[in-house]
Structures are given as structure tokens and as C-alpha cells.
Length: 584
Figure (cartoon, rainbow, N blue to C red):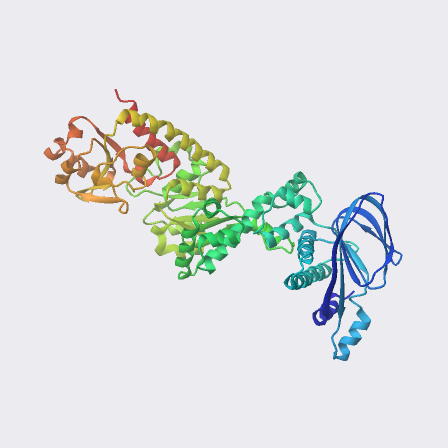
């Protein structure tokens, strides 16, 4: 059977669907011998039985499809399980006038009369087409009959595709491949594991087990990957709104879709669209971190979908394997990795720190290569350590090209909420579950402290200031660390610190009395320690109400600002709790 000849004739044929029906035969019943009045396709939905076509025996089972021509004698016997099948009868001819070559090919090939049968590799795709054909066939409108014809052509296309890619006597159905293909084509439909299992005649538990073994994820996780891939494509290539995108990929609730998208990619749909739009001008990267070569397995697309995707400021990165040597160009990422039970192979240090690496992390660190400072990374040392992956921030934007030549590089926003960054680092490290556990523990911790602080503080204002550059920097309510005090712990900012746009503002020493906070956290580092000491020896400082009441608390810039990760932020919360709740 030369499929290409059949395709040529199907393309030129004039087609009419004569009958679409679903037949049910209970156990023990026998379909009496009958002669087919037209070319016929039979597709078995469920059950088992024995089919005789002109005396040639075929065994019917779920997903079995067979074809016979007009005049063939059909008998179904030995029904072991309740048998359910579709029967489609049609008439196809070559319209005249027609070239002699086609007529000769028709006589030789007989595509509408030939008998063949096989177990479909993509049973779900065929079944969904047939179910729609049955539904439309029952409608009296002319439009419905045209729809049936359109669906029949789809069925024939699937049938020819099967014949192109299989050897009839040796191929066996691949359940995972059938399920993934079904989801690839019907992702916008309501899909459950039970529905997939029923379509493919297996148990839900077996379906889960096969997916886990083949793709290392479950069927619904794979469906989520497919839907998110489609969402990313729509966000990049169209301007349609989130509600329409949500509906197009199978979610009625656009808010639910947005939460899923953010959990899946680390960014919101709108942020993703902005990032991709911005990165187009910079030639956005789609980088793959892998030591594997692309294979010929038909599940290659499905396997790629099962791999972790990281969205960053320069494009997308797909992880096909776990990076073992990660270099970080901001110390906060070291904190994130340690919180998840790992560590970088190399890291930069904070410029104002005397210690090479954060003192509060030293006991947890193994051997880590010193890569210079955040402002001036040592590219020669970085290159020599042969990293699998580099994580940088927009601080290294000017050298991003050089970094990308050393190893695949992702650029994360430095001032992003540490919780969002933790989820991204968790995705990179393959520790998504551990990241969620860290976040849940933090949520429970601040929930308890927020209640206790509300009782103890009774609305007293708390300010975060940092003496530097001969001025005093006031961290506002939207600053990433100050927001932990004001949002997470429910403390009250002074009026001047309330801001929705600026993360900080500069005030003079003489302006401090106007700030007039009840409590001050003073952030200091080695670079500006002298200026901080000088301020605190002035008459203006000593006249502040908070100073006179001993409501001033020293804090390290590195801990509160530079090391913006889960371990550091937990220590900040602990310091605040100790100051206000342990005070006598």
C-alpha cells in the first residue's frame, strides 16, 4: 500500500458522506452477515469481537480501525465485551473529465475499495473527530452536513498520517504519545485524567504511572505546560487581552489563569509580554542548557515541554538538565540557593563588606569561588571556573554579551520581591517544592508576629534610614526591605515615608525633626560608618524624641539591603521582633 498514491487520489476525489452511526452490540450478540452498500470505515470505541470482511479475519478492540469497499461481506462475531463502534459510509469518485494518469492510478490503487485494518496509534484524535461527526450528523441543517464532510476529511488525514508512520504488522499503540497528542490538539477543552484514561482504555492510575515514568510529570502537569506554551505564544505574537487568551487556552477565569502563569513562569502575563517586547530589540534569547542531543523520538516535543523554563530580562532559558556549577553575580542569590539546600560554585561579594562572603552564611558555605564584586565581576576567574549557568542582574547589563559567551546567562531583576526570586531559583535548581515550603514557613511566622506587634506597638511609627553621601536616605513604604516592616509585619511608616513610586528619598540632618518617627532603624556599613557616627553626635540628632527615648536600633546594610534573600529577611524579621517584643 503506497500511502502517497492514496493521498493523491483522496485530494482529487469528489466525496459524499452517506451515513454516520454508532452501533452497540452486547456480549453474546452476533451481527448477521451483510453486504456493504458503500465504502465503509469502522472504528471500535470499546469492547472486543471478531470481524470477518469477505472471510478475512480481524480482531476488534478499543482503537481498532478498518476500511472496506462497497460490496464487501461483513460479519461480527465472538463479542467478549460490550462492543461499541462507529460506522461511516461514504461515496468517493474522480470527477470527469480527469487525466488518464489519475484514472490508471485509481484502477491500480482502489483507495476507496481496498481492505485494511490496524490498531490506531493516536486513537484519541480519531475518536474526538468521530464523536463530533456523530453529533453534527444528527442535525438537519445543511451547515451540519457540511461540517460532517469537513470532519471526515480530518479523519482521513489522521488515517493517512497513521499509515505513513507505521508498519501495520508490528506497531503497537503508545498510550503516552496518544495522550500528549490529544492534549496538544485539544488543550482548550475540559480535560481530566479520568477522561484521558477512558479515551485510551486504561485506568487513571496507569495513565499517571506511564506519564511519570516517561516524562517525569503527570498528565495534568503536561496539559498545564501545553496551555502555558500557547499562552506565551499569544502574549508574544498578538495584542489580545488576558481574558481572551485565558479562554483560548481553556480557562474561564482569567485571574486563575494569571496566577497559574505566574507560578509557571515566575512572572505575570502582562510582565511577560513587556519583557518579550523589550527584549525583541535586544534579540531575545531562547537558550537551552543541555548536554543532550535532540533525538528522533516522536515524544521529543512532549519531553521538551516537561523541562523547566525560566523567563528573564533577556528572554527565555530552557533547562534540559540540572545545572551543577552555578555562578551568581549578586550575593542575594547565594542566600536563595542556601535556603533551598544548595550553594553556588562562585559568587561576587558586596563592595562595602570586609568579609569575602556574608558572615551570617559562612557556616553554611562550602568552597565558593570569589568572583570579585557586584560592580566589577572578575571575568577571568569566572571563565576559568567553567560554570554551567550564570545568574546576573541588570547591574551587569553592559557585560551581558561577555557573560553569555562564557555560559548560558539569565538576568533577573535585582529589586524583585525575594519571594518571586526564590521561586525562580527553585525552578533553576529543581527545588520548586522546597521553595514553597520556605515561603509557607515565612508566611506562618509573620502571621504570628503581625498580630503580636499590632498589640504591642499600638500604631507607633517606625522609620528605616541610612546615612550616606552627606545626607540621610529614607527608605519608603515601597522599598523592598522597608515593605517587610510595613506590609509583612504591619508596622506604621511615618507620613514622609509613605510613597507609591519612589523607593527612597534624601533628607538632610536638619530635616530629621520633621520626620519625627517613634522608632528608627539606622542602616550602616563600612563605607559610611564615619558619617553615621558624626550624625549621631550632633545636637539635632540628640534632640530627636526617639533618640531621647532610646528607640534607635542599629542594623547592617548588607543584611537589610544587599543580602535580600529568605535567610537574610528572616533575620531582619527576627531582629524587629526582638527589638519590639523582647524589650522590657
